[in-house]
Image 1 (cartoon, rainbow, N blue to C red):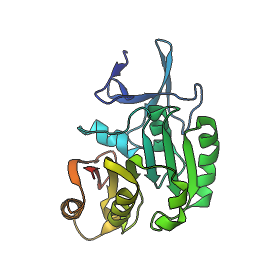
Image 2: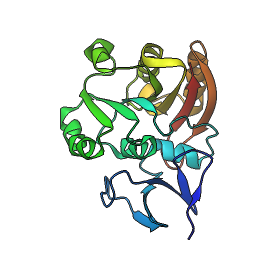
Image 3: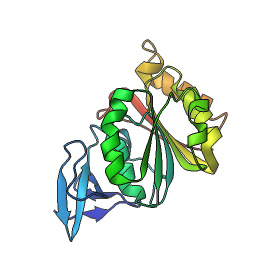
Image 4: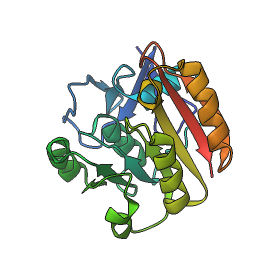
Length: 221
């Protein structure tokens, strides 16, 4: 089967599968499939395990991460999604990865070491003062995926602090983390209203069935 470009730079497709070109050939990060095609090695970007891949599969119209992007990643965890961002941005890009769990961050360290464009930072995304001196530049994109009732506030505070003018924020929102009683649809509506006080919501998709009760916002600040 043929591998083709998508409308997003650095992201490819083969049938219904999304792919990125492996920055570290022959190295898997989370057991993903590797595919050789026309002299390049691609990694399958699993939409069941990565929210941006799910969002793109659900028809997302804007995806601002591209070669050379500088990204602040809130809730980087062990690097499943970050490794694909790392593929896309290449050696000239950079990911500042904030993670509150030292145990989880340990799993990311060898990946970061091999890839060279991920900077893992042990810190709490709710406490910007813990890491603001480690973010060496204004970033192009803030990506937020923290399962916290305050996630929207965390996203807004970090975006307004660290983004370049007209920079983009990507918010992967788990509705059940915000409120277990309200319907996801209500939470998405309230979230959009709150976001629109600070930025322009450029796109929104629900991630079901790939990620149950999750929504994905693309915002420009």
